[in-house]
Length: 331
Length: 298
Image (cartoon, rainbow over all chains, first blue to last red):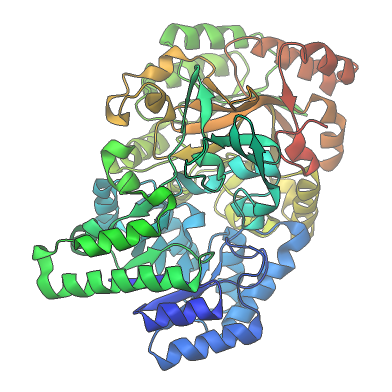
């Protein structure tokens, strides 16, 4: 299975390449990708350096253009597709039907992957994208159980990539508007979820409070681990109970599923985290490379080593990891 | 402009569904969307029941559209969908690209629901060529974006071949998940949810710890806490080129909402006063339409 790793900067890209990525994905420095954060991503010259560095090491470079353009900003997405094509990227990761249409019509040679933001969770949806845009691969949303991924892999008209590690979206990606409901900015429209510009921290007598555009997301007692106020990971009141009504702060980790995913025929494992530091990328990519190599060596005897688990838990949200939707009881 | 009644997003007992549509026979709704869009386990009504309801509504002069699941994850869901596409005999609303594909393969026209991501005219054109005859704008988009999309569609030469529908009243559908939040709220696993949704005819309110209304839990769907009300924007919508206004069913008061929209589309009421009167018992939002956070009220 191909190990597809995130890079939000040139140092992160080098970290991914040096530690064993088979492919690295990047975004341009604007709203055309789903990690549109200040100080992150690549301009043309940095993207070229990224490509050269990756190529020297035999690593493939993908460009994510995976948000949804609207009429007033359509031209930025069109330009992004042209830039990625000119760059010679190994694949474009795209979500919007209009952008896919433009890319296929104007750059027939391009290798197109359907982004997780395209929200295709079944064979018929994949057939649509394959038939209309000749996509070669699709990244699956993190809503399917392992049994469902297996069914889909049997019927899929295209190669499948799944998320292996990183932040856990519990909603079907590309179909979640929680962030724009509260802040006016969403992954689809702006490439941002629960954007940092809307976050306020306040020390109060009741505890440390995190707010998003004024809305109380969580309140922490002294000594409690205060995580980033992502909307779906706050503590709210439902029928007089206060709890993580949608999801706990936790990261996805599917290291233990490597044998099953390989056996099903999954072609690539994606590591989430273009917003993360080069140190994070180093650590996560190193562990995953080791794990995948180990699986290749021992096959079904594969067992995740304790040191891998500990190492990944350290960089996980709330120091917790989960199999997420892959494990049916989680649902 | 026409008036539509969206599919019931909640899980109501069979009798309640039946009574609801009986009442709708005399409502000013021109188009009625039927069917289950949230969870395949909700089977108080079987497909044959929906089709029977459809026949009754058709006889009474309503246009009927059969709506479909928004998140299709298993082979069983897909098989059920195939059956529906083969036998429904009426116009269908797709809420997942699977349904778009299946209807398009069968060369059947379809409505793209608000869960289909159409953010620009080029996307709309691709789907129009695949059989789209009507689209419901994604709920997070604004009037300016709508204006831009329809302008571009006119330039591309297909605007007059499609209808535009706007989700205009009701709790906004905001997200779909692998997880069932209703089951979670009762500490039940999704696979043994005991059909808990039946106990919440308008979903479960989710508030902040300061009791600010934020979201509504409805099985695997998360909705807005406040109710969208675009009644005051009706004339503006007509100017932009909106063809259909959608009202989303609630357990109480839907008929009155439809009557208000009916009067407003005929220019018979002062819409601001309706807003003022209603806001005493229901918080409204409309921010998305004005390009702001969805929860805001202009």
